[in-house]
Length: 493
Ligand code: ADP
Image (cartoon, rainbow, N blue to C red; front, side, top):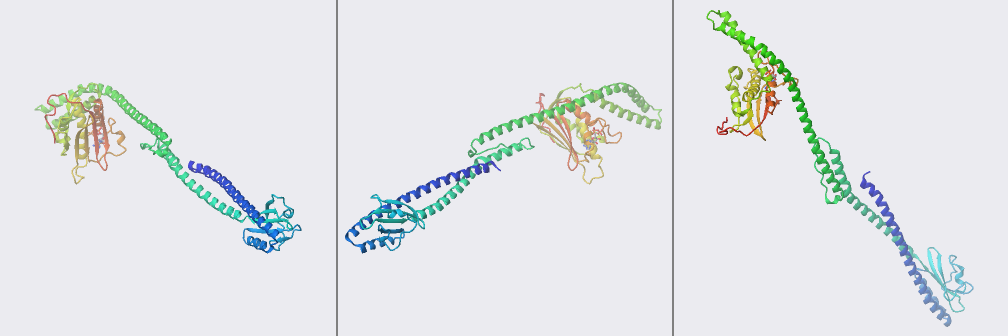
């Protein structure tokens, strides 16, 4: 049961009881007033009739007395009017004997001031007995209290109906007032409390003037919810930051271990590889080398190049602490790594769509490393598109978009190639994770690119697009260029 209903259940019955008591008192007072009026009327009538009776007895005009008394008797409110002899018989006022309901005292010689009282004769009756001239003993006047009784009955009905109507109306008004000042404001506050801590941001509770003190409660609640929301946001940021930091620390540790390993390997393998490469090229250049030996020497040179490339990549990861920062124009870098500018075996036939701002986008960083990172991403997109060559009616699309946003430079590389199966997504940035054939990929491209970008204070994300393709997003903190002449080139495509 709601608080409004409960208040109503207490208020309305007490109100009805109070009104009932008031109505009872009013009714009682009214009945008394009417009774008194009846008493006065009976007394006055009796006094007037006594004068008439005395005169009629003195002059022996009994027929006149009879006429007067029977005239009074005709009044429906008159129960009895009679002049009684000492024997109890009636001298005048009809032939009836004295009814049993009236006390016999009325015929005893009444004192000068008279006798009076109430009797129950088919309804209440007020009687007055006054002494009259001899040979009669008493004049008896009895009047019915019908008016009082009828008025009492009418008043009872009227007052009951008024009490009911007033009670009902008051209950309705109280209910409406309680609803607008108590129930509805409380419901809104309660809904707010329930929503607190939920996934959606809480709208502040606004209550009208009618809510009275509950408005202060709502304001305090809004203030509390605001502070909680701020705390929650700070906490989420802190947790996200901590998770990102932990991820970075883990990766750094991995890279540090890898760095030590690859540094040693590069050192140990570099010299013999170099010797093998130089010797193989010497064999290639010699006039005496047969065609078969030349072919084999070419294979050795190609393999040596491949292993040297692997070692270079490993060394990139190993030398993370050797950044050589300078102002770098990202727009220029993007144009450099666009597939059409790359050798055919990397770039392939794919024509990219470049979207670059008109002015140079300068970031502080190591030009070679940043170029290497972007090249890895573009190469992945091109290879993904190339893997579907011949299977699609339309040629694959590759977009490279450079933009500036709130002090950050973003490079988006979007392709509509086959995308990545969900099971591979968690492993994409792991070193040596690859889905490509031997010789096409070593699984270091993304790991190296992310390492380089993070070293520059940025981030690299890879999103699998719906219905197909991949979107690589590089974010780098943008610094205003200190280079003279920046912005004059206005390069765009
Ligand atoms: P690699 O290219 O040598 O395989 P990467 O670290 O660059 O190594 O990439 C790891 C793997 O991520 C790839 O083998 C490929 O499966 C997936 N990948 C990266 N970029 C894309 C892309 N744009 N489209 C589809 N798959 C991709």
